[in-house]
Length: 528
Image (cartoon, rainbow, N blue to C red):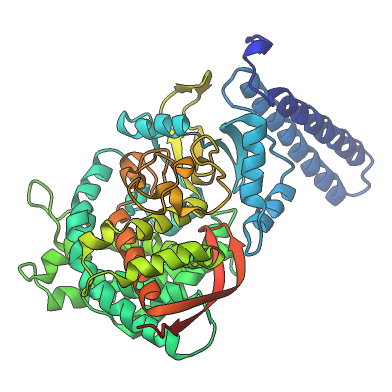
């Protein structure tokens, strides 16, 4: 309130007006509750009205506190809505077939700019989505001014030992331990088993001769991760993990961490316990079959986690920490891979010119597939990057101010939570012309025959900068980036090289991952 109106951001006055209206509304509840309590004829009705009055008074205080923070430029503008109703609208927006989340974010961006406030899971977050905003936020990881801050229910589902829940020195140590397993050069070791698994799955899918659900991609993703982690595929274990994992993901929709029987968080935590028990048995078996000196202990993800040591030659992780991090890695590669594949097939089906160009390029690839050739296939990579831009598998993530920090005239208190939005960043019209249209030409090299100068984004997606933050950024950038790229390259190359693809019944979803649910049918190409 000490700052002149010329410094107030667009939309701030409408935000303050919202607080005024809600304060008046809640105040009327307080007055009504007090009057009703005074007229109460029973002790029960007296206490009910008193509780309602105290709750409404607490809501009044909350509105006043937020309004003061806005006036002091400790929070940007934004429409927060009424409790319960806004949570219901959020669930509707992110459900399958919903389209409200992206539209809501875009509307807020047009009204308030690239930094504004929203409620997520009952928590007030500052949403940031501009290229400069993400550069600022990710730099906070390195100077310790920000740290990870998942919603409490998601942090609880990941577990206390998960790398995504860590900060500071221990987080850096964990990443140093795990990064070699996902380094681009090391990931090429997985090419043969990924390709073999992919060929087997595609043959199985096509042999049915029917339209199949994209839910199959989840099992496929689990098989790839399991093979890379343990060096082999166990169908029974994969089915068990898949079933429990679907229930575990349901806990992401919880608005509380209270484990009330029958609620999504309670079911999710029970599924987590079953997953951890399964992982416990797998770890025991792996250690029996693969001692520390064995080849698999050095060439698999599981071997690295189990036998990895710090600079003092001490084991880095306890058994519980290993299990929490394997669970995190499954999440990072299970539904995100499913969403990536389904979204790519959807966009190719809607853009026959891209489908044709990709099929022609895939037909010229060497046998067996070579990682360097896949990495440098221009149409393959352009289609992959454009599909991810249109539908990033992860909407965004969270950071929390570890100390008072400043940005764009705002001074954010310690504990302020930031939700960086990949959906906003990849729909920036200043960076991506006709951002709402799929056009793989924006990522083609200049020397390619299909290149169009007017569509050139001048952005290199492989750099992972804040103009293309599909895999996050800062010190918490996605560990499995190279692995995810290899998976999608192999699948896209194989499926377009050997099959005709038909897609029907596409349905959009936004949470807990972002993409398309489709039905697809594969028919072997007759020209092969």
